[in-house]
Image (cartoon, rainbow, N blue to C red; front, side, top):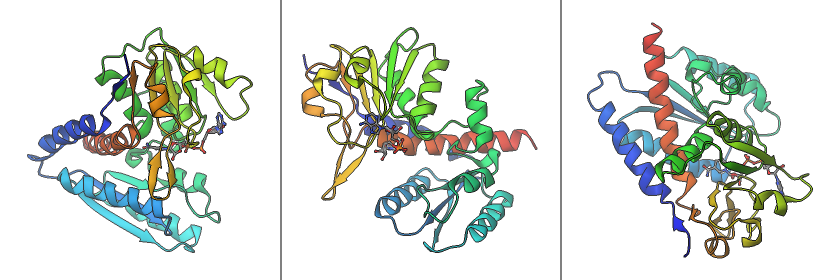
Length: 281
Ligand code: NAD
């Protein structure tokens, strides 16, 4: 039987509707600032869809479109202003940044309380120490998808392909927290096929179209495709969808799988940040 398709778009829509209902009666709306530097076409699309999602959910939002050649110190000054702005509960700087700007410095400059992407080292440390706060949106979205389809995580063997700070590492930690046994694979992994074949849950976060074929997937595994490759205006995941759906039990499509969840989790994180900021007053 072919795999069931995990409809990330519908799940994300349900979450966004729920958030909208929570926000409607609030006197002070959750506020999110999204900062983009330069004109990377994918970043423009992401930032615009994040802004639209904010508007749909009834959030207060600000969008900053900064020039490609902005000096690092000026970007840091801008972030410092946003940190102090009481209307804002979340700040997101769209990555990647131009090469002359230190990504690390910028992420460290965002106040941990407003760090809705969860990339500030303080929140990364909280994640590693099992201290719940703001989790990175995409990994959080992956775990939510597994929960939504009723996939038990405890005791399962999860294989994550990719070890970035944005997806691979945090998703592995979140699943470890949920009592999975986790293997992280990467570009230097010796036998990727053999490692992947052990997975009950296989998560690919690489950005290489067609990397995951049927031969790498155990019969009945759940396959989550985080990867995105753009080719001639079309989006592709890492997973050879038509091939892998023959053996998997569940599979996410690209587009319409993990991507919409990232935005839903960003809104959720902004709501979490608002509540925490208000509690600490
Ligand atoms: P990255 O480039 O920082 O990391 C890629 C990882 O893949 C690295 O750890 C590398 O070791 C590993 N890798 C590269 N080639 C490999 C190979 N042949 N075999 C095994 N591992 C290999 O990327 P990232 O920021 O983690 O993003 C990964 C993908 O996920 C990208 O396509 C990105 O666009 C996508 N992404 C999607 C969302 C979403 O919302 N759907 C969010 C974030 C990232």
